[in-house]
Length: 159
Image (cartoon, rainbow, N blue to C red):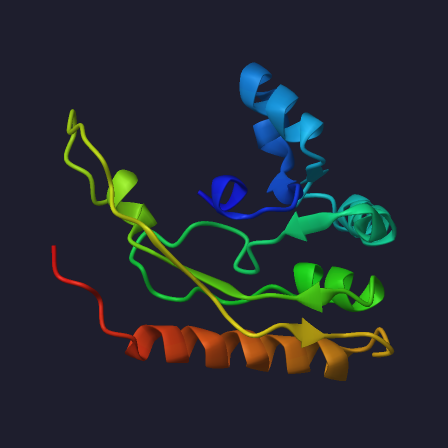
């Protein structure tokens, strides 16, 4: 949904396990995805640093929770993606995606048909000149949480 709704080419930060799915892995490499081994902290850090360096060449989508919420609730935000954005002095554009879980966890087995998914884009947060330190990551985290709460208050359209 994000790839089709954005005008710019975007890559994704993804778990290494997805690199083992042949067709998906090929597509992800073609669009500029960065695979992270979450079990190897030093390797993950190096991957994030390389991604931060490459970020000047395009945009990366980072899911700051590190995984999809199965309940629709906000999961704890991990610092790796936040740190990568600060290291790259990137502009962060939070996106709140609603109802995508209806295609996964909440979908009845064998169900077919379209799933109505909404994406809300929030005002950008520019990290230009921010130091790579915990206080900067916390500012990003706080902003993401504020966007989540604002998006949570939005009224969902009736189907």
